[in-house]
Amino acid sequence: MNPALAGLSREGLSLKGAQAWAQALGLDRLDAQLLLLQVMGRSEGDRAWLLAHDTDPMNPAQAAGFEHLCRRRLTGEPVAYLLGRKEFWGLDLTVDARVLVPRPDTETLVAWALEVLETCGGRRVLDLGTGSGAIALALAHARPGLQVEAVDQSAEALAVARANGERLGLAVTWRQASWLDGAPAGLDLIVSNPPYIAAQDPHLAALTHEPLAALASGEDGLDDLRTIVAAAPGHLVAGGWLLLEHGWDQAESVRALLAQAGFEGVGSRHDLGGHARCSGGRWPGKTAGAAGSGAAGPRAEG
Ligand SMILES: C[S@@+](CC[C@H](N)C(=O)[O-])C[C@H]1O[C@@H](n2cnc3c(N)ncnc32)[C@H](O)[C@@H]1O
Image (cartoon, rainbow, N blue to C red; front, side, top):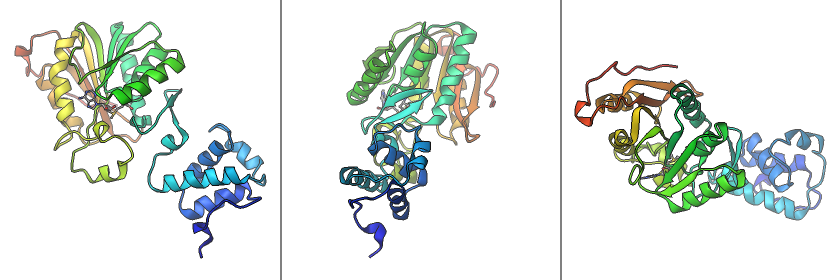
């Protein structure tokens, strides 16, 4: 029998032996190390400790715990769920299957939002589809004077977000709603990372552990983006901004939606992989009847 398929709960197994077992089973080296640190009660940053202690023995409970986590990982469960946390914008967020795991690419949206707020001097911000609270909490952390409100349709997601806010001591107002329903007027910035995967996209098959309501959005993936773009003008001050994350191949479509709705200064920002993954524009304060003037026209930028 392949030793990798055998159970791991053996007396005297070393940390190095456990890691080798996990890799033989098919786990990435980094994933195996993070799960090993978890069962050993060490922090994620302690990988050097693992090297220095690689001959240390594990007790049977630690070995069994490690094996359990490895087998869950092999079914595609995100490491962040197995660890129960994910770092985002330098904040340690608690995450579980009730929320999307915050992605590093979404930090592009946060960076753009902070730039916009710096330029326009605005303070009233709304995060739509907050999930774990990642964007709202990052903004509240980076700019303590902001008034940040965050909504999600999922009560379960909001419970995770609220707990993150309380643990981190960051003041955000949490509200359960569908997109801009019941949202106030006079906002300086609306920011959102909504679901944007096409319902039939084969990539969804690899994301079965995360909530489908956080991922899929209609036939072309743009249903929720359309809803938000259409409703946002009624809630922004003149000169207020709408910034949206979207799929790597949706920038042109989202810029067109924004321009057609009457947003100006429409442009996109690139994620860490070089894809145009966020698009946004400034609401000039015209009535919706003036929409479609095209203004300065959409543009892509780094
Ligand atoms: C892609 S996830 C983004 C989560 C988080 N903002 C992030 O960046 O990690 C989209 C979120 O939108 C929420 N959502 C889906 N439909 C919604 C709706 N109609 N109104 C409000 N939130 C919605 C989902 O529950 C999910 O938390």
